[in-house]
Length: 97
Length: 210
Image (cartoon, rainbow over all chains, first blue to last red; front, side, top):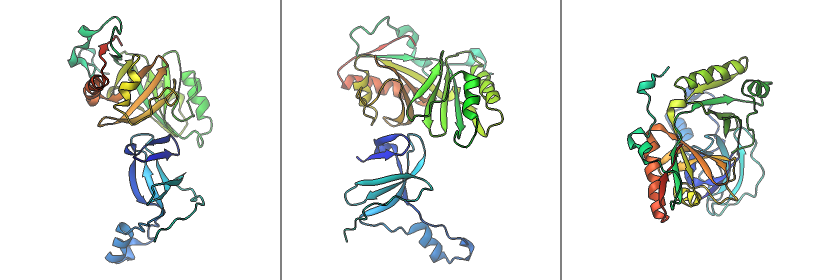
């Protein structure tokens, strides 16, 4: 089980959290002008990196706040956590491909 | 206002009053139904609402705890930290209209600030746990580290209890005495689950007075 350091409550077990997918996806300015393909791309497609990945988590059983996590998806090492709206901190970008 | 005659604690059907023991005896865990209290949920962003801290202190006589996972209080009234802008205010007042009255007190005190105060008294049941095996038994139900070095007196933690989401645990003192705030409909589940955990930890439970 992962031990996730919630920026508000401290380190807690993974089953207190919910996963929110990739962070920092930019919502298209004018969705009405997009084709179905482009919209589907925005909604469903994620980078899904093998290595350092920016993602969103919610501490649903704790303080119920959303925050960002930088996690190595291969080793599960959590490289950084930061609040919503903050600029991601600099970390070693790990890639395995 | 809730009619007195129709008001029941969520664990009433277990008939706990007739099972209350004077002391723990050989039991490792003592459990009690804490009965009714006035419980309010307060949401306010102290960083953005200038003077909100002081307004709360003036209304209730103590300051809101701003350190994560802590509680603060005075004379049977306390505030539990639930999040960076959320608190649970608990008043040891079991009058049928306690929730409404304290809601008015806090609302009037916080007047002028952008905040939300909600009476959630009837949404929760409060279960007390104590005894030498309380930490060991609770450890079987929650993913938290229950070691005395990790869960200290005065701390409040929200977590998962078995399959019940969003339990608030408040460690009142080191003996230990825990207050568990659980959803009303989950009160019996938490009660039975704890007894099950005690069996697993090869100890007995005793019902104590709230």
